[in-house]
Image (cartoon, rainbow, N blue to C red; front, top):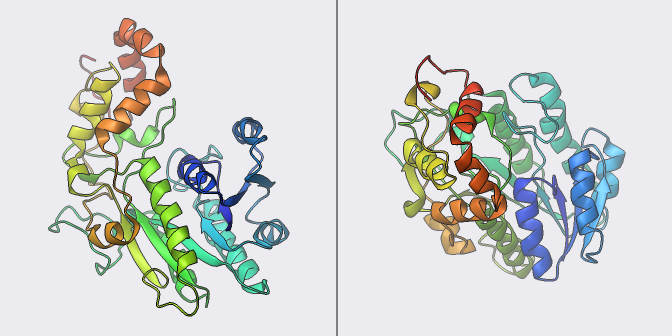
Length: 333
């Protein structure tokens, strides 16, 4: 299969690429030519299964060239509230983000519709579309109403509607909290209250879910009743990955040798995360393999010898982390 990944050099994109190419699929990545992405692309240059297509979702000609000849499109590229590859945040520049998120999705759908044989679309959405649900009994289900409270989530809801009305074969995957395997601070880590429900899903498991969706979709042709196309599925780690945020923060910070930070550093405003009903997505896609413990191990492996430096300079590391919190109150680190 020929698979286009928009935002293929990002967190989930790299996980999906890894799974897809291991199965012999040919992957084309549409992404921005940034310093970070150029560095990643150089590492992939020798892989015959990977093609890099530099471009901007706001430019219809870039999108049309990337879509041409593809069997399936996995649409990952989106400006997020934090940790965007552009260095900009959707909530601080909502109109600009909308040009990319909503306008870019429109350009993608238009390009797909113009193909002689339109490719199928896997649209990656988010549980943020449900809004703040702390007063509702968990878990969230596909049938729950959406109530987006952020520009980012509003863009996702609008794009989901466009996907459903596109006339293409599509599936929407709404992701739980998918933390990157990266050596950089997510400035949003302090925005989640410690008492907030949160479901974790390992980025590699999301990549597995996407690859399995590609394979399942390929197996379900026009003459085969589809269990996948035309559906919305929730992608999370399952019951063993359902926590309160305090547990997630403690396990990661303790596992990296930093230690849990004071509660005063974290927001008390309810955040758009919750536990999900993933029974149907797991039945179809069989992706729930890893846990939070696996993520902590992977982060420790990524950091390598730097773990010892973190422990050696633990007080300074803690002070540096706390300096990134907009909620920090005076007190010990």
